[in-house]
Length: 227
Image 1: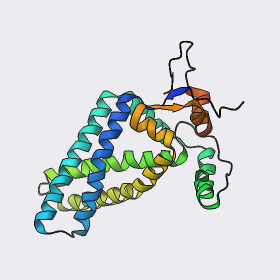
Image 2: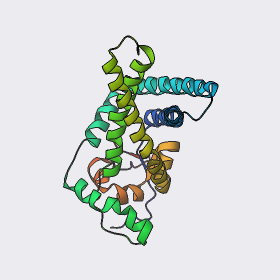
Image 3: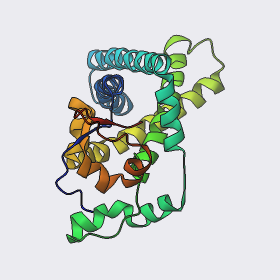
């Protein structure tokens, strides 16, 4: 059975997730930009001080966003963690062809890709990096900002290196994530606008999620929902 023209909406990202993602994105973009400026130091002393101030403000916003979402939507956080840290042979096969994206972009051909759940293997890897790297950034940033002279010197140095490496890894992931998010435009609109994806898009890219978790559309036409 083909779902090519099935436009029934499926809720993929509820409102609280979208709000969290908005604030996360709007705080991380200035964090990444100012972090690079603080590392390379190309500006005057006044410019670097302004850069540092923006970095601190954006970091506080990101930390508050993460804490608030964890407290208010703990079930969502637990579910997300269980998804991104799951692993199977399908993930190995996905990475062997990199989701078919290089073949599609460079060679114009479509290769078989193993069926995915709500997130594909690349999204799971990025999600794990965001969870681990974001936690390191927030905790190390708080120490480096609030008590850099009270903590032991070796601890401060270690946290500084961890902060730098985590920031660079997440910044390197960012352009790829943004490009593929826009390429998957239905998924992009779901995260940034209304939360829904068409059934045909979900059935094509996340067939296991559709098969195992999607609640069917009700008789009165309400959107289908998923976990």
